[in-house]
Image 1 (cartoon, helix red, strand yellow):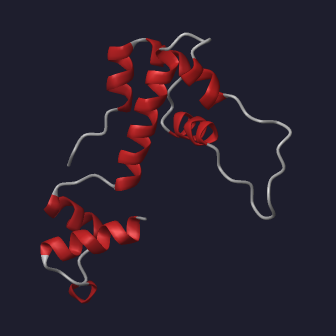
Image 2 (cartoon, rainbow, N blue to C red):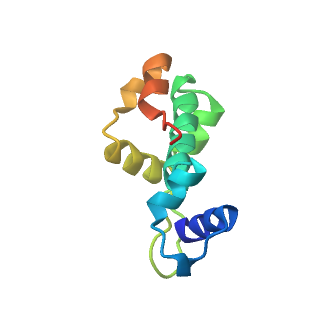
Length: 114
């Protein structure tokens, strides 16, 4: 995904790979953050909305519960949404309990534009 992002940013700047400009320099010229960080931010923002709902809410129980007796196909197991959120929380050193404090959560998941 980042390859496609950099390709589009290079196209916006009018540069090609032959110009041998580093990806970080291209990103600084355009003034955007990496798309992976923005995706994590949006996923964690949605997780914060879910955590603020009561435990019996259909939205919360539907997303965070698994179907245990389903059979998966061959190959690597698919990354579920809640597994991705757990990975993001661990990577950004944020606790789940912080989501109940809206202002602190907003500051914790904020990704500044460069």
